[in-house]
Every structure is written in structure tokens, then in C-alpha cells.
Image (tube, rainbow, N blue to C red; front, side, top):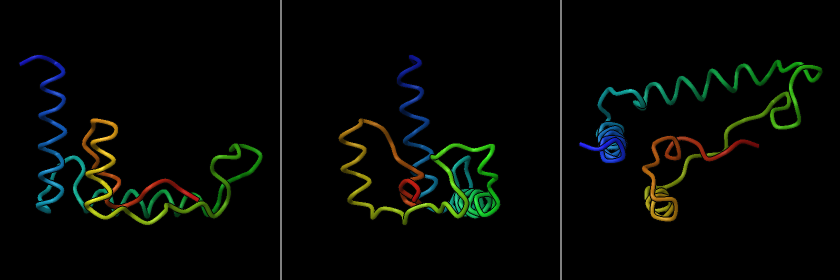
Length: 90
């Protein structure tokens, strides 16, 4: 299997695991933990250290519905796992 095919297979398999609620590298539990952990860190950002992209109180935007994720994947030709739980930050 070529490298590009292997990467595509891994992305599809990870997406399948996430949608099925199975444990995997990008499980729902991991994504929920990651979202909470980063938002907790963002409550105490030191403005002297961090730039304008992450300021104190930054939060993830809400996740996208399945149809929006499929459209995004088509546009970029990638499998989206994180987009189900968050879509950017504000």
C-alpha cells in the first residue's frame, strides 16, 4: 500500500471509529477531554507570553453537523474528525 493510500485508509478508519463511538486515537472521549483541557488553559493565558490568536477566555466554537463535515471533507479532500466537536475558536 502506498503512503498516500495508507494515510487515507487511516483517516477513514479513525473517522469510522469516532462515529461508532469506539476507542481510537481521536475518540469522542479524547476530543471532549482535549476541548476541556485547552479551554481550561485558555482561562489563565499570560498576555505577555501568548500572541493575539489565543487570548484569555478563548473557547472552541460549537461542533459542526454531519452534513457540514461531509461538505468540508469534499472541499478539502480530507476526513474531518475534530470538526464534529469544535470548529475553530473565538
